[in-house]
Image 1: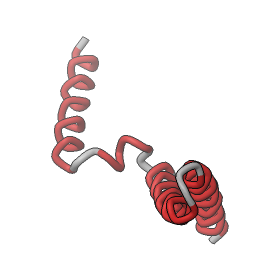
Image 2 (image 1 turned 135 degrees about the vertical axis):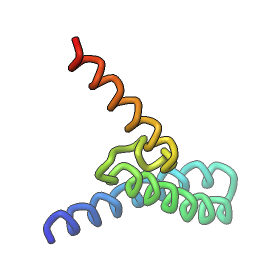
Image 3 (image 1 turned 120 degrees about the horizontal axis):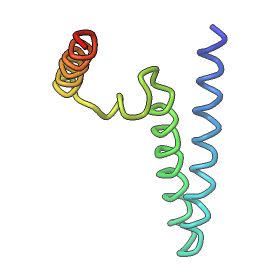
Image 4 (image 1 turned 135 degrees about the horizontal axis):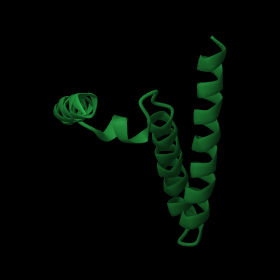
Length: 85
């Protein structure tokens, strides 16, 4: 339960930072761009937090299932070769 709360707070913090950065960049253009930049920044921050909090790590969230099977098969072959020596 504590890990879920910690993950939610981390996601909210990164969303807030993303919103602030997006609004600041958009504010250089205009008021409406600041609003849109804040919304897009919050979405990007929450997405980054969600991907980074994945238990498999950052790259595991981007890797497809086929890539994982290929890597698992390669690790098994390397481990068998090392054991044979």
